[in-house]
Length: 450
Image (cartoon, rainbow, N blue to C red; front, side):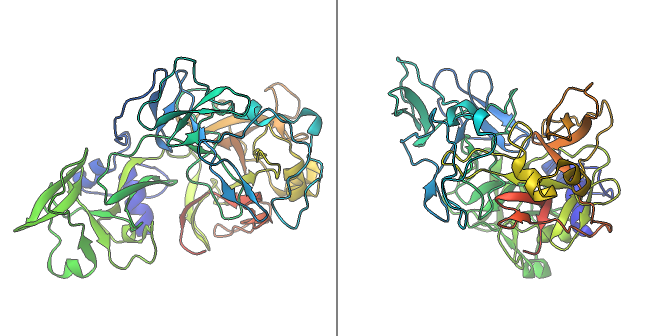
C-alpha cells in the first residue's frame, strides 16, 4: 500500500512498513516540527498553545483552550450562537428542543435531575472591568450584563473536559458531520501561510492544501529550492506557481523555476498539485512512490498495538487483531447542544444504541478496547481510563469489575462483535442519522469512498 508506506514512513509512525524516504522529504514532515502561526497582539492573560491534533490554539492564563459555538442550521431551526451575541447561559434544559425530526420537542432528557447548564460545561471567558479590545479580540455583553471576550466576533468559552495545557477535548475542527449537532470549535491564530494556501486538521496531521481545497505534494527527487519535475513528470503534476508580487511567508519561500517563473516551496521543498486528484483534501498523490502530502505538523501515533488497515471506505484504525476501532458520537437535542459521548455524560443514549437499553448486552455487542495496566500513550490525544461497565461512567481503579480501557480524546473506544475479518466495519454509521447524531463511527484516517 503506497499511501501507508509514504505517509507513515515519512511521519515516523510505526504502524506498518518502513520506508527509505529521502532525507529531505523525511525532514519536511518530521515528527516534532510544529506549525507556524501569525503573531499578533493578545490581551493580557491569553496565550497560544501548540496542540498535538489541532495545531496552535488560543488559551487562557491556565492554558485552557478557547472555543466558539457557531450557529448551525438543523433540520428544524438553528442552534448555536451568532457573532457578538452569547446565548450559553445558566438555564438547565429538561426537554429536547425538537431540532432533529422526526423527534418532537418536549421529550424529557435523561438524568435530568443532575443535568448541568450550558455554562457549567462551557464556562464563558469573562473580561475584567478594565479590559480593552485589541485587534480581533473584542468584548461583548452577555444577557446577564457581564462582559465576555470574543475573537473575530465569536464569544469565547473554555471546556470543563480540558484539564491541562494542550488538551482540546471539548470540540474539534475535524469531526463535523452533516447531521451532527451545533458543535464547539477550538479557536486559534491564523496559520502563517501565503494567501494561496490553507491548513486542515486530519487524523494524520495538519494538512496543507490550496485555498480551493486541492492537496499539495512534495517530490523526493527534488533538491532544496530546486525542482527536478520536468518533461513527462509535468503530465501528472502541476508546480504551484507564485504570483509575481509574492513574498516569503514564514516557512514558505519561492525559487526561480524558470526565467521569470517562481514556484512555492515549503521548508525548502517545491510543492505541486496532483492533476488527477479526484476531490479536495485528497491523499491520492501520496500513493505514488516518492510523492508525499504536505503537513505543517504530524499528529501523534496511536498506542502500541493499534494498526491501520484497508476497508470498504478507506484506511481506518484497527486493533492488534485488525478489528475496526470505533468511537461513539453523541450530542443531545436540547438548545444548548451538550455532548453525550463521554463517560461524564448520561449513558442512556449509548445503551439504547448498542444494547437496546441493556448495559450487559451493550458491552458484549460493542466491547471496550482493554488497555494493559500501566499502559502509556506518550501523547495527550490517547490515554486510558477505568470504566464501570454497568453504568458506563468513570470508576476508581479498585472498583470491582472496573475495566481499564483505551480512550481517544477523553472518550472510550470500542470494537464490534460482528466484525470478524480485517476489512470489515459492520458498525460504521450504526445509530441515529447514520451515526452522525448518536452512534458509532470508525476512526477513519483516509476516506476513499463515501
